[in-house]
Length: 117
Image (tube, rainbow, N blue to C red):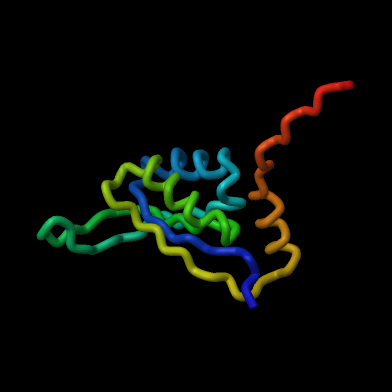
């Protein structure tokens, strides 16, 4: 049984942490961003072995918002190819999971007003 919550992992340079976290939170795409500083990433990029000092962001969101979070990461992230790995949250503190779903609930399109008769 799914909780309806996903954990998305992404890494970024230190100078991008606030832009990414604030942008995602202000759009109500994530309920919480945890920042783990001091991450060293080693990877292949364009045929070269690279080492970067980065921060790891742990993003909590609703299952149905994962695609929107990934799209926002592509818009906000300084990397050409930002990491975005969505992991299912099978269980957790029910009140916390409710909070994640509640905080990220965005109003839908408003119905047109009915003219007064």
